[in-house]
Length: 125
Image (tube, rainbow, N blue to C red; front, side):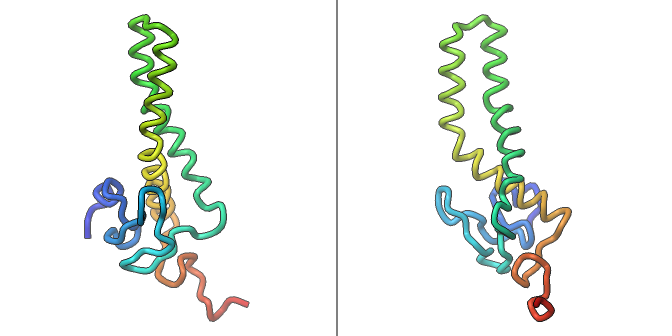
């Protein structure tokens, strides 16, 4: 079992830290291929990932743009660099924001192998 940081960096399951979260470039596995937990607990679950996405986007373009503004770069150049950075980094931001959200949520509300929501299917009516 790997560390939590290693699991986030390699985009692995927050529960077993072994199964891959993504099956393709942006396509997520619905269940962990190793332990079987459901990644999307409910419809709209990844709304929380937007907070991580926003933060990563601000950092990703904020530092270079701040540096360019301090150096009094041309505003068109600053806007062009910001647009290009965001365009290039969007897939990575998407993937890591979802991965961070899964790990953050799993830390406070751990997933289990019974379908992902912790409810016992036998007791549900």
